[in-house]
Length: 439
Image 1 (cartoon, helix red, strand yellow):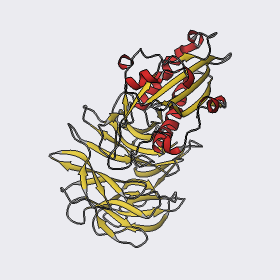
Image 2 (spheres, helix red, strand yellow; image 1 turned 90 degrees about the horizontal axis):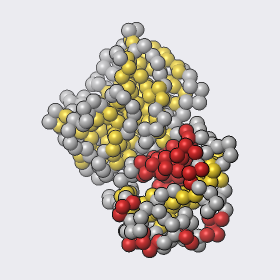
Image 3 (cartoon, helix red, strand yellow; image 1 turned 120 degrees about the vertical axis):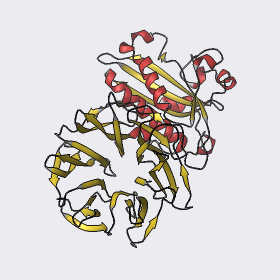
Image 4 (spheres, one colour; image 1 turned 30 degrees about the vertical axis):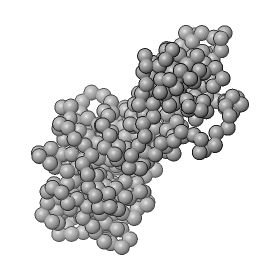
């Protein structure tokens, strides 16, 4: 991981009055509705009058501004304000509250103003101070300082600041502290790749002579499990993020389907040892620990909430594939999907209250969301192509999925409210089967 040294900007407290929690602008993104915040990211400035912004190498000030802009564009509760729409232009006049004319930003209907101040640093790029202000009151929401040694650190600086800003406004900043694993085609092979949730730092994890399928992160984000198929048959693989080591083992039966981590760090997987696939929990050595769901019908695609009390899965016990949820303590199984005859690939929200799944309608797959508390189902995605393989973000707000809406399959992200999907850039070629995990 790239290390970014964080400076202590002690004078921020002196420049801005202390803010009571009740006075700070907040937005509830988890309720039934969400407020829109008009955000403006001002042009970067030099830290002092004796310094020229041009002295900061690698065009870093403009690049960092662009990273912050693109990061915030993933958040549907932000409405980005363009510089041309700001009275008096895009320069804030100063980077700290006493030198900012908040009145012209009020007139431009800006709610949150982000400023950046740079100082060149010998032997590196420079020091940057990033601030976010609530325009109406002029109060500081977030203030952070960073030492940037090289250009490659700029995406992480932007992600850290955006995570702190999102957390200050919503209570959670996990979107910028998470990553996606996904599958990409490699000729006749399929390999596992990984990137940040914004699609930064795409890297290949596997280089196996076969087909990798159905990746799933452990709840702590340290291990990744997936199914693998080659000429010898099906295997289960586990990749360790810290050691970058891969364990691979052939399992009993002829198929290994959709492995997933439980909240306890064990692996659950569908195996066909007794005919139709059933769902088993494995020991650390991949031996069978216990049966999680067994039926004469097909039971596949296990997924678990953060507490480990519930398991979503797919079964055709009623004649067609439908989504069910099992109470792992009591053993009760409840049907979740009722509309349609083909519902698959469930993903259970971390709090165990919602299930998102792929529903076949008019020949195309669309994402549907079932509320386990109210029993209400609703359609989340619309438009052309098929939307498949949903995966909840660790904060239970965003949903990643693969879609053919633009032709070949790519990774998109929406929210539990069904906001307009945003493309996650994962490089050339098709990408699918995303799995969301913590950094």
